[in-house]
Every structure is written in structure tokens, then in C-alpha cells.
Image 1 (cartoon, rainbow, N blue to C red):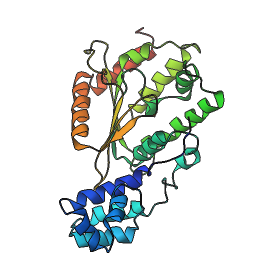
Image 2 (tube, rainbow, N blue to C red):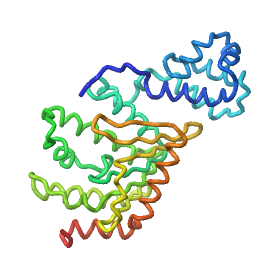
Image 3 (spheres, rainbow, N blue to C red):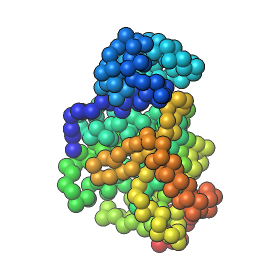
Length: 289
């Protein structure tokens, strides 16, 4: 489903939210006067409705007395980016997929650490093309073949963060053992290829894969699919919860803290890395069904 963007781009909202955090308890009217702005302009900048120049970020922070040169430079740099993060691969898809997906892939690409869990399927960052086609091409909700191929391309493009030369993302993923039991109309080769890819990924030093066994309590996963993204200073974490319309994202501290606790509880119930790798190998070798 495509839609035109009616809301500010995610990074413009992030810039505005960080300026609001730096403003702290100072009244918006007093802060706006520091720059010769009216309160409405500052409000729209903080909500991401207005773009702010990088130089204005630095000047505003100087007037606020913020002593964080690295953080200020990072926010100023992002403030100068084209709307929608025009340098990214996702630019080619922004008129073809939902706004929430474009927002998510931008956040995902910028994250320094990702913690993710899906209670039913292999996480998207690990999926093979055949697995994606089976998930999307046989859904009860009609998706045209060319749209399926587009989403395959998007999903594979997202995976670049795992092996990029500079700063590959640190990823901790919880994978349900139940996902290995899926049967596909295209045949068992789909799952064998997927398991082989999972096994290969366990060799990467930046990736931690833990299997949540069938014996784990049913509470794990009952809250649905979730991803917690962490970023370099000064950006706050983001929690994303999947839904059929593309998911919702939050920077609220209480929500992030809660979802981090949920993730940790599931990670504690999952198998350690070596046992997880051994279990994947057993399924790949056909020793378990």
C-alpha cells in the first residue's frame, strides 16, 4: 500500500525532539526569543514541521548553554540532510511503500545496536529471498507479484547493515524454534536455505542469534513482534512494534524501558548462542522435525 507523506520525516522529527530535550524546563517563549523567533516557529521546529539549518542548531544550543559539542554536531549534521534522507537506498521506494516502513528503514540503517524478536517467523534482517516470497506471495491478503518482488528487494537492501564495511550494526535477535517447523508449498528447500543462512550469520562477530525453544513459556511472544533500536550519542532509543499496516515507533522513555525489560526476559529464556547454533544445525541436518 502506498501513501503520500502527510507527516514530517522521521529524522526531522528526531532533530526537533532533541532540541526540545535540550530546551528542558525553559519556557518555549523565552527560548524562541533567544533566536528572534516567535513561539509558533519554535513549536513547529520541535515537532519537525519546519526544517532548521545546521548553523541555527549550533547557535540555538549555544544560547541555551548546552555543553555537548559532539551531540550538537551530530544533530546539526542530520538537520542539513535532504528531506527523507535523500542519500539512502530507500529514496527509490518512498512513493511505493508506506511512510511507516520508510521511517523504520531509515532508523534501522542509522542504528548502532538492534534488538529484535518476532514470535512467529524468522526476523526480516535474516530472511532469504525465497522465504520472503513464501511469506508475502501466499498471504490471504492479495499482493501482486511485482509488489512481492519489490518487498523482497527492500528486505534484502535492509540487510546491508549486517555486513557493511564501516560500523556494521550490532544485532541481537531472538528466533522462535517454532519458525523452523513451517511448511511451504514450494517445498522444504525454502527452509533449508533459510536455516543455512541463519547458521552462516552466527559466524559474524556483530550478530548474536538465540533460539527461543518450544519449551519456553507461552508468555514470550504474546506481546507481538518488537524491535529496540539504539543510536550513537545524542539520539535516544526507539522501540518499534510491528503490525499489518507497517508498525508504530516510540521514543517515550517509559515505553522503551518496558519493552527493553520484555526483550531481556525473553532473551534470558532463550538458548545461549552455542546451543542455538547447535539446534539450527540439527534442523538443517534433518535430525529434528
